[in-house]
Image (cartoon, rainbow, N blue to C red; front, side):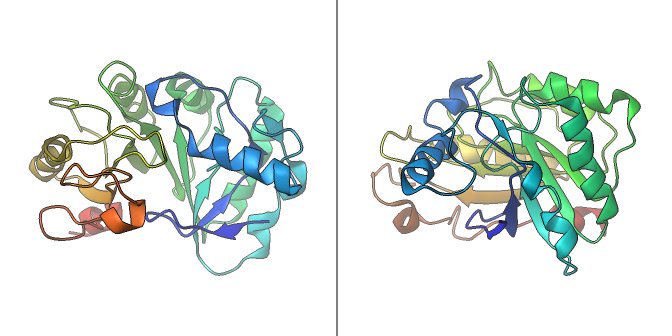
Length: 248
């Protein structure tokens, strides 16, 4: 079943597949892997295989049952463009999104080439937002070029976990940037200046900026709970969405 999400930038999650494999530094302490193992131990439906990539055809029609416009983070527990994805099943997932224009579907991947290739000869409905993870210079920043060349109405970056100063980035064609620190017992700290560097560039390039969290390490460099560290950056929360830019 779909669930209300605690992820600050969405409303609900929809996971027609579960499980994944690590491809870059941002995957090291994957929250989804930890959660999948816990759900398997609890006997939760859909997690019999733990974190092994699995397709869930029984979940395909879930968004069709909801009329209220909703923002869905698609595959919070997987990657829609995983190497083991059946292209026909992916077509079915996209078909459901096309049939429900009242919803917004936020698709985030670390497999930008597979996403780019998939959409080369397919029309992208306006309610599908496409994003890539941009956690560092080596793996994350190069993903941006592939994303900007996909003709989606909304393109976004998830700069989380932000693992280093990613320097100057070209945000041409990007509509929204989410920044956040890593959470979990083995989380790597995020320096405040790294986050401010991204925020500055969003302001300069007229891109919506959303600060999701400090994570396990606070702005003061102290390790505590994610909730205690909060979401305040420079004295306030930053909750911009791409609509706020597009309607100006």
